[in-house]
Image (cartoon, rainbow, N blue to C red; front, side, top):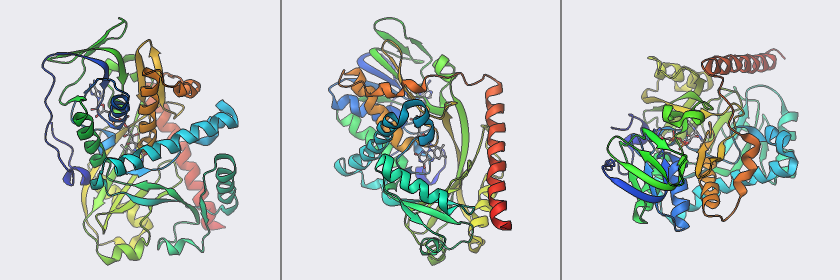
Length: 428
Ligand SMILES: Cc1cc2nc3c(=O)[nH]c(=O)nc-3n(C[C@H](O)[C@H](O)[C@H](O)COP(=O)(O)OP(=O)(O)OC[C@H]3O[C@@H](n4cnc5c(N)ncnc54)[C@H](O)[C@@H]3O)c2cc1C
């Protein structure tokens, strides 16, 4: 199995194939899924003295973790409001702090494990495409006051210092976030896990599991792992073997393209090294990579097949914001699946004795999967029960065959709101 052709796989540090499992092994913990969630959990368990086997259907970080936008920022896909409703302000603050800890885990690993091929770059700017300075200023004030998270408000007059487009009205800068090469991060983490005695098998789909015996067993085409605990980390690629967890996930597709090398014209359009995204449901999210290429992501859909004109679709979105890039060619285009729960918060917890979920990170997994992995490791080793904060976000049925249809119509409704907000700003 090869990696999809992406900018990341073209610039990956080492994509040599790992073996598949062809024997019966025993370990303290068996992790199913070798994305960022599975790898983070494995690293945290190994740091706590546990023996670990990771089973990955395809390749390490072949799924969302190796093909995403690369934004690493505080927060969860579900947002702060939902957390406040379900947990109150104190619980919501604890949750947000965990999301910041997730950012720190990645930052610290890059430094201490010397993962320099991840090319980290600081800053994220959030922008709005309609005029609403008061709400945005209030949001920045609230984040500082209630969450201790400082954001720099950017007025319409400030934005030209960062980008050359009239699409945006206001924004804010988050200096604590950063962006990086997610595939190289995962590959680096996998290397460290193996150096410390963890075992990772690729091309090794889990076909069945015994989740009910005191010692669990996990079976692949040619091998088996017996383990005290198992951790389910299949993300948007979770198949039928994940059973109830699979039926509690909505896989949502989003797209990314990377341009050819653009030269000085790119800095004329985008003057900041920070990553940029707008606040729409299907936001544009983009950043400069490789000095003068533009990585541009956007659109979401419940359709899992890739459109033929994917590159052209995203190019059109890019030109809508930066018409000056009209002559620029797209070099690579790809799609990926995110796993969403209906409440948009992750499933981090124990679903049966010794069976753990660490999944459903939605479009915000680069910080939340690492903290998810840490919380599960702390729970398995008895170090803490911090994962219990997520009890407020239990498994929720995805709605069966109607689930994607409902999600798609909610999305269209939100798109309509986005369109209306922009239109009001144009006509005001
Ligand atoms: C295009 C795109 C852009 C995104 N941008 C960002 C961003 O900028 N910032 C951010 O924070 N988040 C972003 N996300 C979301 C983020 O990538 C995910 O939340 C995160 O990677 C989820 O990690 P994971 O390990 O749960 O899932 P995945 O990375 O999808 O890994 C799951 C793995 O499980 C394996 N698997 C599934 N079933 C089995 C089985 N039966 N046996 C063995 N293995 C199995 C799969 O092969 C897969 O490799 C984006 C996602 C996409 C798709």
